[in-house]
Length: 371
Image (cartoon, rainbow, N blue to C red; front, top):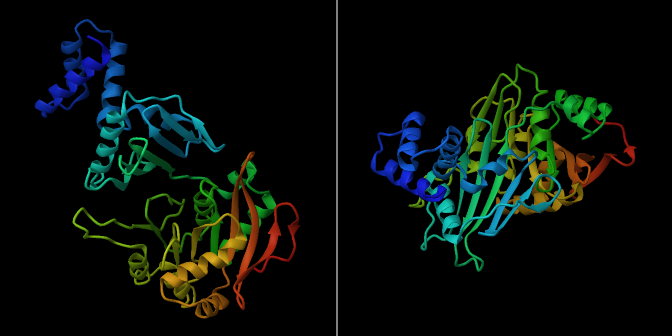
């Protein structure tokens, strides 16, 4: 009997005997099924069984790769990963598309979602370990023309300080001091950058510099922010259930946070009409608020803000008035061949809405820091 046959029989036994849950009990079932088997083989089968039932199956070992941020499955023989240097082949294969489909369905169902012929694509968030979450997107065929597709974003809650980022080369020590002063001055700021550029890592480090007497409320779709701070409250959005009910949006959570005596409100990623409420908060005495925006450069921020404000029914003229009072700083992160770096420090101005560069990595300070 080969390994896959043993695994299939053990899974069938466990399905018909739900009372068998302990590792020792399962190991005994493996020995009874496989006959003469070494302790190492039993351990390997236990680990594979766990991966097949509550983990990521054949993809599970990839999570141990250093710096991994993304795993994508384009078909049973096409698995790719991103460890910070772009996509590369993972060297992992599935037996067939049905195995990929079973994994995708199980991951979505485990998070309370639905994936079948009537609902052929879905998003989910899986808490893998205490410090690692996985954002899952799955699509079946059709509409996919190449079989079942899986896209996994690995989200690790980083505990890293500004000093440690300076040691890694994200910025110099004098810039670390300037960022620390920005936080202490309670200036509002936006961290911008492309996918995997280190926006959340920088934001986590900055929040760790907030005075311990202040109350931080973070609002996210997926729990990524975990600052080293004694008074941090985390709020998470919720998708609608299969009946289309129960959705909790970032905009609604932001309104609730304003009633919770916040000193600082932080939006994990601003991608909708909640930008209107955030700007309103900045103009009603809530200093030091922050958030991240997906943009490849600081110069893209005005257009992004105008587009997001339009979703909330705020025209460009009114947006300019809001920004005039808030004047948020913009910290631009960029992923380079040598790592993730802080590329630019700017400030958002109005009439018209634009950004003015204060510091640039290649040129240094162009103006004195306004804090």
